[in-house]
Length: 168
Image (cartoon, rainbow, N blue to C red; front, side, top):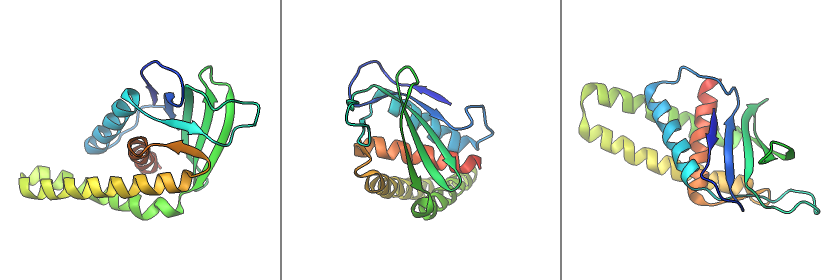
């Protein structure tokens, strides 16, 4: 799944490619979350790799290939022309509880919508926002010293991690 970002240069992503860049059968609620994260990332993001060689300036725009491989979240960062720059891997262990909770909230949201329980939907949405905040904080913490991202970009990347995990 390729995500074009709006023009510009500097410390940003021009494109994000999700592992297994093919149509998937995601539940509609998860597909909606993925689509929203994609649209938000395309509109605005802050992304600066900090592990580049000394002779490579940390200037973008960058292309990010995001994948889950062997229990790790892999950030394969490339130049705009797709030339490899660096790869950053994060263990998925610290994210597992949040991803599991996210999946349960998506399932609960689907059931609440089917039952027409507006009050329950609102409560679940509040829980999802809190979970996204927690996921974003963990993403920034785990990427510290490797990739500089702002909080909004971290929230969107956390959503995409949940989508990738759901595909497994």
